[in-house]
Figure 1: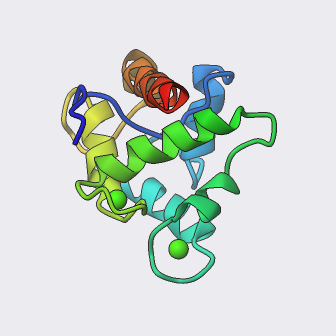
Figure 2: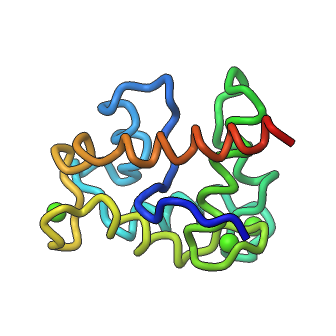
Length: 135
Ligand SMILES: [Ca+2]
Ligand SMILES: [Ca+2]
Ligand SMILES: [Ca+2]
């Protein structure tokens, strides 16, 4: 299995500002990202009730204007990040995602922390998309 930088990760879209990305993930709008927000995101988009997102469910959360390889790259990254590469984004993605962005490790991600670290995730998606291009 290809091994890549473990600091890479999550949901953001490359064409959004960090403010827009943060808002998109802050499901309850309280200005702080926690595991709950990520779990809520999964729950909200889980159509078949298996408590995880498969690619079809995930693609519904991406804008139609996004290049398909990029959407797929993002999915592949998140699928791996939940510890098990099984074609699904499961709830164990939530702690992994928060941990990556939570610089001071207090269990919450502020916008400042998000802005500082989100590029790692966006870069990770870029790398996954590039891998798909080469196929
Ligand atoms: Ca599902
Ligand atoms: Ca998975
Ligand atoms: Ca924090």
